[in-house]
Length: 141
Image (cartoon, rainbow, N blue to C red; front, side, top):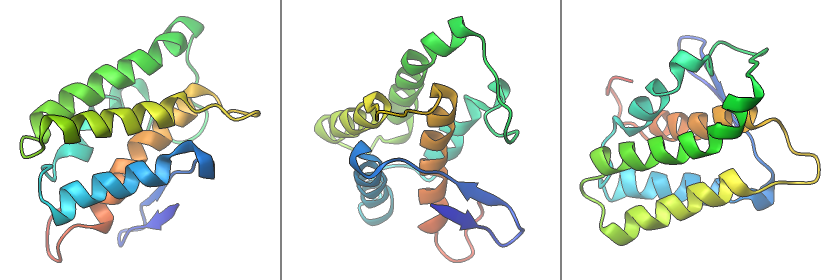
């Protein structure tokens, strides 16, 4: 998905069809937009956790192997923590469902998988794109 925002900024993310990313995107969008159970700040709060690591500086992101091996666990922990804070309207089951879908996308490995840092950046951008696409007219980003 490639989203061109009014100011020229681009949000670009992509996964294979069978990864479950579209299902995660749709369920997150439903809970945040239609059911209003997830705060609009969720995507930004989640993304801010990873900004210091350089996920949004463009291409050429490099990480050492130790950090790369710990990244999936870090993503899961940060997602769960931000979800607990920003999804107060969700039931325990709905939060568990989102964590399962998140894990499915994070764990899905095609034959020619990309580096985990690229997967992580796209996973974070999935939520940012949802937030932008479903914000109300006149609402700040």
